Length: 83
Image 1 (cartoon, rainbow, N blue to C red):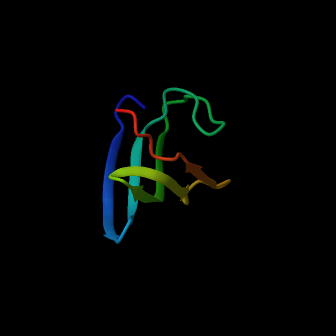
Image 2: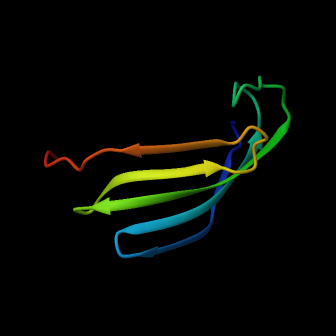
């Protein structure tokens, strides 16, 4: 999406977690979620939750909630002592 507009619509946190509700809009020029670039406008709305440990993201999970097939994920990466 050459003209992507990424916006954070809401963000709040408590203790070691931060919640982010976001929205992406743009023109589809390449392959995305099984669709081929046809110049159409798309909008993806979703959320992410981040868990912090030692000042770094230790886990994140979320979902694209506006796509017909949906897409959820979760990743866990232990914080590294290496800089």
